[in-house]
Image (tube, rainbow, N blue to C red; front, side, top):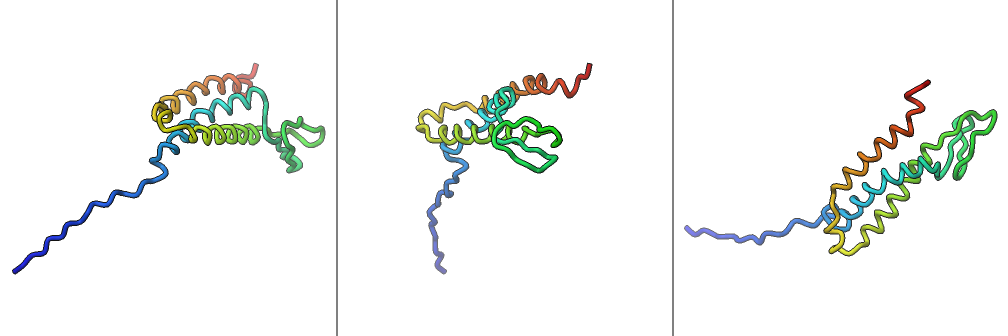
Length: 131
């Protein structure tokens, strides 16, 4: 009786773009810049567009409420401003050399959103505390 011995070479698992240093840098930058960009867009009132729900009309940039059309909504525009800003800066962060991106700490990914919460509470106080 003869036995055959098979030796198989261990093939490394294919690398995923999720585990790449560039994606890690994008995620860290996007997650860090996003809340800050949203707070700045909210404070400075920089929406990409304004939505008028009474007439289902969109306007580029900030447009004040028009008499007879009801209130305007800028929240969607602020959110898009923050997403664009975070995406562009995240892309630029992904272009950084790996020796720099390896030094990026994920602590800021958690710290900056938590630091944005007090600002958001302060900004929304008019809706919670009526005199």
